[in-house]
Amino acid sequence: MKFKIIVYSLLFGLFIGFQSCEDDDDEVIYFDRSYASEDAEKIVALSLSYSSYGMVAVMNQISNEIQEISECDSIYEYQDTIQGETDSENISYEYIYNETYKLNCGTVDSVQFSSTASQTFDAPRYSYDHELAIDFDVTGLENESESETFNGLYNRTGWWEQGYYNQDYYFDFECEVLDAAVDKETDKIYAGTAEFTLVESYRFANVEFTYKGTVEFQSEDEAKVTFDNGDTFYIDLNNISLAD
Image 1 (cartoon, helix red, strand yellow):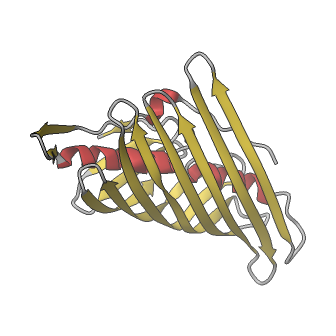
Image 2 (cartoon, rainbow, N blue to C red):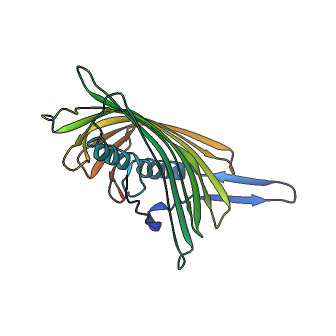
Image 3 (tube, rainbow, N blue to C red):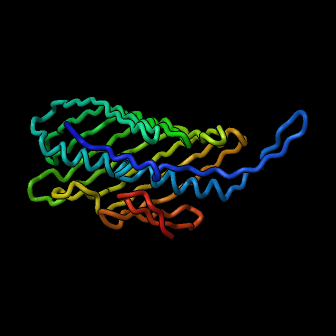
């Protein structure tokens, strides 16, 4: 099983704003919550997009692979490591994954998919280390169906370190996928929803924020995100760019 992971260094920036003042004994850090809201949007986009090997990229890979699975009740397992680096920019990355597929045959055929993975990225300005856990049930396998339907859970958690400030930012993104439709010809999602909870922990400032929201997949290239407070934004799933 082969796939490509495209790493764009400019897409992975995380900007944390803070001010500090200190006396002889203690340091007091002031944290502006508006920065946390901006970071939340970036985390959701990173967790979903193709270029960061987010959730829709995993669905794309599953849709491609299950077309080759035909034996009922057999478990198919795949493991691989993808590594790369650029000497000119001092950037390195690694993606390690373990995947299992099981075809359940019955009145309605389905595939059970589960995966664990780790993803690291290291550059002069920032670095991160993420862990992923994914469980999907896929239906719509019959030949007359033009799309597959995905339901399940996607979790990404980990940290970023700012090279210039030596500050860590931790997060936990938990997403439940609800009837997401993936086209069998393109292997890309084009409809469906997901509900998520995101917890951000800024340990250098000893603050934590929790966000809940909904993702609506508008097309193969775009998703609309609505936070529980009513704020909305759009994600270009191909390059992680954001728009109001």
